[in-house]
Structure formats: structure tokens, C-alpha cells
Length: 169
Image (cartoon, rainbow, N blue to C red):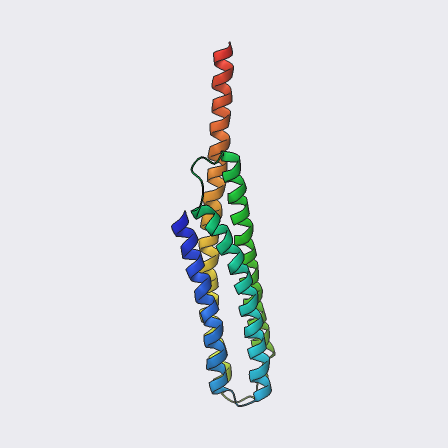
């Protein structure tokens, strides 16, 4: 499970690096400084929000790595819930960031001629969408793992209670 969490962290870090690359790449091909500034602000906001969500996620990851082996199942369930919440926050922030970029592209002034800037924006957004899909798949897989663990614990508890009842008879 820790490897899956670390993989999600690497994907999110890749998305963060992509925002920086988008900003630098767009600044090279766009001649209108107002457009560069607007796009740069969007990239900075997206980067900042995703970075905050990633820090929350990393904190929840560190609690799993430092886990005491004598921790009860209830605490494990609570930790899984905390990690799950931070994963959902990470997904939400990444989705919002992608949406901000897509909104900017939709509102980008098109002069009717072939624009390297617009072409670059579409390429950037395409790569960003792919990264987001990979992030979403990994988060969904981990959420399913957590659900299975919770159900397994419930089943084990039910079996334990049933065995105790059988012994009392």
C-alpha cells in the first residue's frame, strides 16, 4: 500500500512540474504579455493549490510509514479514512486546476490564423489531462483497496462474534 501511495505522490509531483513547464513554454511562444501574465497566474494558483493538497497527502502518508505495529484495527480504519480524505482532496484540487487551464484555453482569443500559442496550450492541456487520468486511476484503485480492507475487517469481526456465540452455547 505504501508503494501505491508513493506512486500517487510521484504522479502529483509530475503534475506540479507540468504546471511550471506549461508556464515557461507558453511564455516562449506567446507575444501578448497580458496573456502570458494571465496564464502564469493560473499556473501559479494551480501549482499552489495542488502543492497544499500534496503536503496534506504526504503527512497522511508519513503517518502510515511511522505506524506502530500494535495499533488496533479501529485506528487502522481511521488512518485509511484520513488518507482517503486527503486523496479525494488531491483529486479535487487536480481536477479544479485542470478545469482552470481548460477554461483559459476556451477563452483564449483566437485571431483566426494558426497560432503557435494556442497549439502549445492544446498540447499542454492534453498531457495534463493524461496525467490527471493516471492520477485518478491510481486514487480509485487505492480507494477500492481501502474498501476491501474495511469489508475484510467487518467480515473478520462478524466471524469472531459468531464463534464467540457458538462457544457460549
